[in-house]
Amino acid sequence: MDAETIYQGAGPQDCETQPAYASATFHADQVAHCRADSHHRISLLIGSIIELHRQRVDLHKAEKSLTLQIKAKCRRLCDGDKKEAGTLYASMFNGKGHEMAETCLMAAAPFIQARSLLNEQRAACEKELTKAAKELPVWPWVESVRGFGAGSLAAIIGESGDLSQYANPAKLWKRMGLAVINGGRQRKVSGADAIEHGYAPHRRSIVWNLGDTMLKGTVRKVKDEDGEDTGGRTALNEYGQMYLERKAYERPRVESDAHAHNRAKRYMEKRLLRDLWTAWRAAE
Image 1: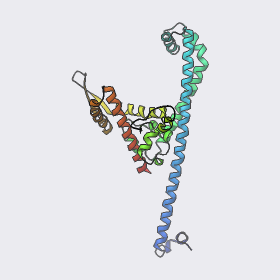
Image 2: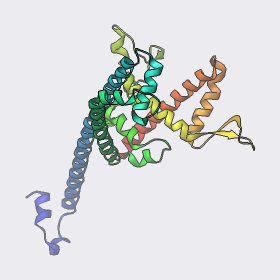
Image 3: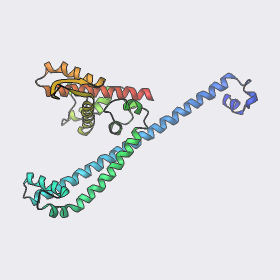
């Protein structure tokens, strides 16, 4: 009779006499089983996030396509005048500003209705993505980072999958378009180099937008008594401070403030992904 059978067959009166190794073996099996269940649940959750993210991307693309078709109708009614077409497009929804607003609205009605339906579906999809992202073990850490929300986490996981599958942060950087390839930044190239770079603009834009949001929430302008911008900046958390210090470091090395800003922002984004990778593995 094995240890687990002995343990399971023991009643309360047998607890003092059962072998110590039996209890230890059963406990180890329980822990292993719980871990396996947890990993399976997380794998299913990640798979769900990936599919929901792809659905959201598809819906967003369809919305944009319909918007372009509606704007094309506006240009056609304005004989190709882009500025007037822009006024007409806005007039369809606010009811003022252009005499042909009602005519254009009738012509574009099927497209507007279809876009509205897609918008509702995308909103529902985003709600599910937010809910799923908050169930990930890494969420408590993400929530503690100012400017890093569930939507951004869902987008990163939707594009990269299980972060534990990346051997180091550098591999995650490459997946999200932030690697260094042959001494230069990872970018969209053609030919044989495209395989080595593995660059996808939409993945890079996810982290770019996240970095932009974080900067708005973590770096503040220093104003004088009259409320005027003094040109100084103050950080509200470690990532804001990291950005400011890196920008000061880069400024003498580049031609403009814009170049220094972009380099410092990229540096902060890479550090954020590294910290996310570390927090993910710690939460497993």
